[in-house]
Length: 418
Image: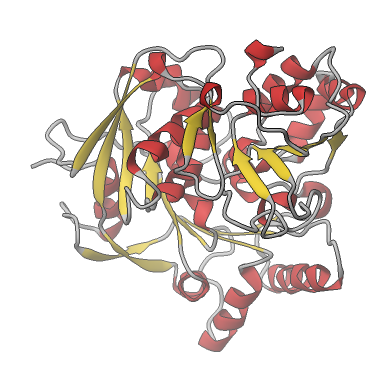
C-alpha cells in the first residue's frame, strides 16, 4: 500500500522508508513558530532546558495577536519575545513596521514551503499545508523542546481524501469551500486526521483559496490540511522561496480512511452561524439577520485577493449606517499594494476603518470587540461564544463576498442582492 502526502513528509523526516497511521515518530523540524500569546510561556519553558536554540534560522517569532501593543500587559509580552530574539539572534523576528499576521507573512516571505515540516504554538499553523507541506499546531512545552532540540514527536495521522470536482463560481471563495466541508463532517469530523485535497477542482482554487482552506482544517479537528503541488503552487513558491524544496505526491494506492466529495459548481455562498463553525447554512436560507459589525481580515482572509474582492463590492457604495466595517490587511506588503491599487481609498470612502496588520478582533483582542447582543459578520475562523467580545454577542463566519455585501446592506447578504 502506498502513502499519503502527510505520510511521505513524516516518513522522510523520520528517516524511514514507510510510516503507517498511528505510528509514533520523532522528526527533525524545518520551522518552529510562536506568537506573542504562546511565545512567552514557551520561552519560560525553554529557559528551564538550559540549551541554546537549535538553529536561529529555523525559528520564527511574530508578535501579531496584541500588536501594536494595546496595553502594558501586551507590551510586556512583546518585550519577552524581543529580548529573546535579540539574545539568540533569531533571524525571523518581525515586529513594528515589519510585522504581519504570522500565517500570512510566513508563506509571503517564503519561509515555509513544499515538503517542509513545521510546528507552531498556534492552532492555525496548519495553514502551510496549502503549500504542500505538513504543518500543525502544538502546545507551548512541545514548542520549547522544538526550539532547543530541533525535533518533535508525531503520531502519524489517518487521512481523509477531500475530492474536489467541478468549476468554482465567481461568487465563491475558499471560505465557502471549507465552511461547506466543515458543515458536512462537523468540527470533530477530522479529529487527529489529515485533510488531503485532490481532484480536478484543485486547479480552480487560487493560492489564497488554498491558504484559507488549509487554515481552517483545524476547525474540523484536523492535524493538517494538505494540498498537492501543481503549477499554482510552483509559481507562488518560486517567486518567494530562496532555498530548494522537495514537493510530495500522494501514491495512487494511498489508503484513506474516508473520501468526501465536493462539487464546486454546486456551491452557494454560506455562513457559519453561532456558535460553531459547523453550523453552516446558505445565505439564501437565512432570512433577514441584521448586523452591527463586519470584519474583513485575519490569517484566514486578510490576503490581497480578499481585499480585492471586498473593494470590488464596496466600490461606489456606503457601509450601512448601523454597521461598523473594519478592514485589516494581513501584512504590510498587502497593505501597501492595496494602497497602490486605490482599494484603501474605496474602503475609506465607503465608511470603513482600515487597521494596521494584526489579529486584533479575531480572538477578542482589540480593534472591534463586540458588546452584548451585537452581531458581526467576520472573515475570521472561529465563532465560539464570547470569541470576539461579550458572551451574548454573535459571530457569523463568511467569506469576503458575503462580508462586504453585508456591510452595505446592514444584514447578512450576498453581492447578488446589491
